[in-house]
Image (cartoon, rainbow, N blue to C red; front, side, top):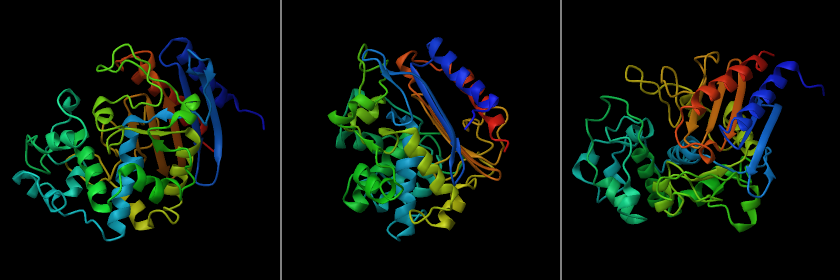
Length: 350
C-alpha cells in the first residue's frame, strides 16, 4: 500500500527529532478499533548496541502505567464487586492515618485526594517502608476541593490492588488485563531475555551517569522494586494499539461497556478534567496538541510517551519515545511532541 504524503511528513518529523537528539528513538502508531492504519519508527533503541527501534521495542511507559495498568486493574476490581469507588482508603489499608477516612478510592483515581504531587521518597525508604512513608504524608487540602496530579495517589492504588487480590499489581494486571487483551509483551521489570528489545533511558537524578536497560527510570518506582501504580510498566506500540482498540470496542471481555463509558467521561467537572486514569478536557496535561478534538482522552509519561483515544471520530494514537536518554528536562520534547501530534492529526481525516 502506498504511503500517503501526509504520513511521510510524520515520518520526517520523527527522523528530524532523532537527528536533533530530542530522543534517540521514537515510534508512532495510529488506527481505530478495527485496524492499525499506519506505523512509523526512527532511531536507535540502544545507541551503544546499535539496536533499531520498531513497533515491538519495549519502552518505559512512565506515567502511562497509571491508566494502562493501575486504573484498569482498579476498575476491573470494581466490576467484580471487590472494590467500590466511594470506599475510604482506610477501609482497605487499615493502618492508614485518620485523614484517609475522608479520602476515597475515587479521589485517588481522579487526583482530587488533596495529597501532594510528588516527594523523593526513594531518598529515605524502599519497598513497604516507602508505602508507609506515602501514608504518613498529610494532604495539603480536603478531598474534592482542587485537582492536583499526584504520583502518591497511584502508589496507594497499586498497594490497594495488592492487598485486595493478594497479588502484586504486576501479576494481577498481566492476568486480568494484558494477556486477555493480547498484550503479551507488556510487563514490569522485563527480564534478561528481553533487554535487547528495550529502549534504554538515562539521566535519572538518583542514578546519575547510568544507562538504564529494563530498569524503570522513575526513582520512586525503582525503590518499590520496579512495580508501582504510578510508573514501572514497559510496553510496545503494538501492544498499546491492542489496548486502545479494546477500549474503543467497548472493553471486549476485559472491561464492561459501562466502565468504558465512564472512562471517557470527565469525573471532576467544575474542578478540572480527569476520568478514571485518563486526562480529559479541560485538563492542560491532556496531550492533544493544537488540533485534536476536545472529546479525546489521553495520558503522557515523563520518559516521552503518550496515548490518545477518541470515539467520534474514532481513532487512537500511540507515541513512544525515550527522550530522557538525551535530555532530562522537557523544554525541547514538549513542543516537539505537539508538532508530531499536529502532523498526525491530519492523517486522522479519513
